[in-house]
Length: 103
Image (cartoon, rainbow, N blue to C red; front, side, top):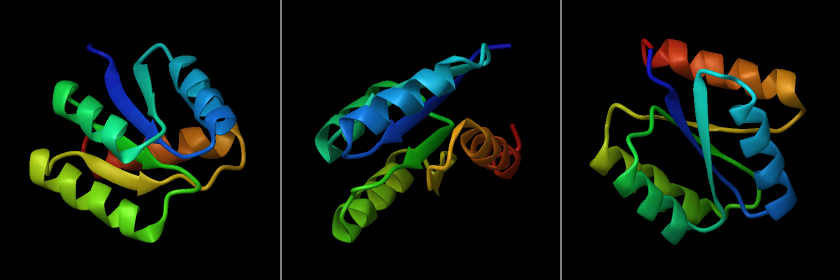
């Protein structure tokens, strides 16, 4: 089974680093992080992501731009809001997104 690619994008560097580290603790997941829309879109164009987690600090207009861009590039990718709250909630968000994507 190949690893599931997950992109986390958010504006707080410490949270971004922590979330990517937590994602990568699961042997079946491959986490990537982006701190700007430009970086997130560049990664999205080069990696086949199954899930994108939108973290804190992203202005509403930029979040809409990301959602629209991701849907245009890969409509099969599931984009969800990450609310924080620890590794248990993160895992639950990812498992729910995987179920939604039928993975």
